[in-house]
Image (cartoon, rainbow, N blue to C red; front, side, top):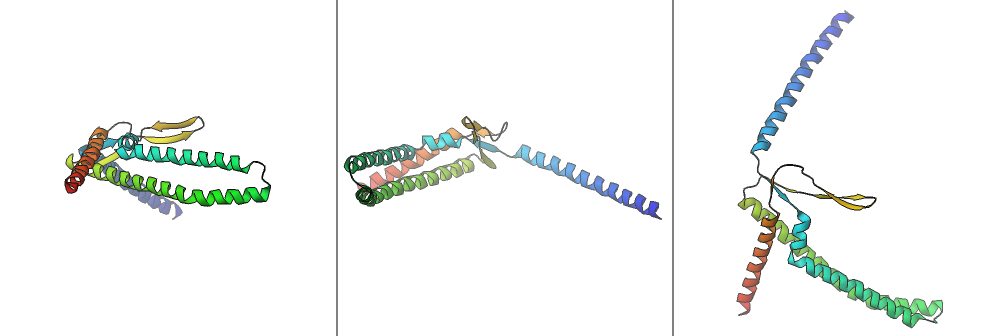
Length: 187
């Protein structure tokens, strides 16, 4: 009886294994057929972000923030010479109280530009995707930190059509159109 149960279980397992294997095989072939028909676009998002006009504004604001902090630190060091710890702490608190609103204003401006840049880029990706009838758009690279720095590795090794320049052109077209509308309302 034990041997008969083992044979039945073995046969059931063999049939189930065959069915599952067949299902996986057919599923993979079906997925590959669907993927072969899909139109895939690739974007180097780092280049798109760097090409956006607001990136220069963000970079300049960040430099301004660093320069202002350095200037204030030098002034604090200059005024703090010869002071005891209590007086130095009071001076530092005064400088921090003056610095915080300036810093917050610059950071808010950076955040505003960054949010607008993100919205522009995502809108441009959608517009280019719709115009080109893409089924899927992927970032063509990913930054991977290593012991010697950051390396860029492609996420997709082979496939798709690079639409980076199309997305950059769409961002610029949209911004020019908005500027024309602003200029028209001013006149």
